Image (cartoon, rainbow, N blue to C red; front, top):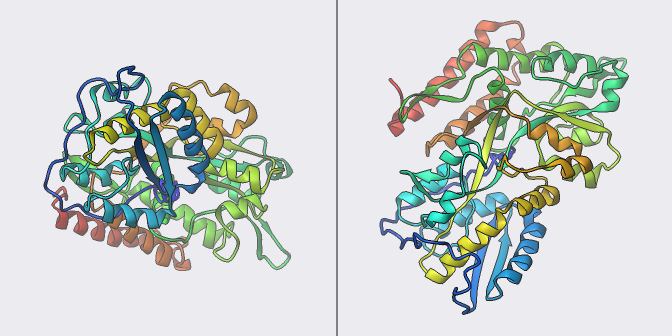
Length: 445
């Protein structure tokens, strides 16, 4: 997910993910929500007017949130939900300042590893028991369930996830005589067959559009997602709470080598041509890896594009959970009620259909959605998942690694057919990663 996720996007992704910056210095524990029923559907619930606020960094979700707020009011006439969205980076800054100051919205979505600091500072509410009991491995992957809890107590409710798939132009594949969609084992092969050059050898159409530049950690996240197809990661947990860099390996070497070969050896991509979604939608690239929100964006910007998606073997998932703050009991109760409403199966399907963002749920029948948008099928395949580790310093790690890739790893033509240079580059970057981990007390030595 381009951030972000969302990550970076998402973001990229998401993620890209949805990584939030900031640190809580609060020490006072916030009052806990009741441990009993959250109040949804309770005929005895207080009918006194209550206003609940929710902030997000995803303006494209505004129509869905407003629809949900209107429908929720039919079930809870006394509750009014105010939805405010901001550009993602502005949202990150706003939340980082507002939560410690205790003047944030009642519902504040964020990534679990960023929420951890606020939970530890007593600034976010634990979920009522009935809310926690609904977050099970029959409805969500275990890796998602684990990210909703701190010390075996539920705090977050899964909201959206960023994950990638291979978007490919069907007409271009047919033109090249390719009958099967691209897959992660044939990215370079397909890139060579699908790239187009003019008489002078200049690239007119990229085979695979790579993320070669861009803001923040998005470059690193996209590299990570391709690395994950080989079983690698950015950091590896060696023992509980102790990590080390995991890309200065054979898997990391092969991943960076693919980038170098595409850009400098076979010239199937070039920093000078259009990239990412714009390139794909305008026919300047035959395929690329991207998050699901591209589907709705393409419906608007390139409605006649004949394209499909193919699943990855593995996915780096950027997760955003709903969290509840504040101390007003009526607002806390109404906030959990609204979150319960938002996460109903039918409302989660509506979210995907209206925004393109993925629901983290795995128990939904999506057949009707696939009928209208078959491209979603590439995102709901069973696969290995990786997630951002519970490391406050991880954004720094990924951002600095991304900067090294964008300014050297992807741009140095002398890396072509020079494995020692690529490995030396990765070793140098890994030393920086490990130094950051050591400073934070998380290095496995």
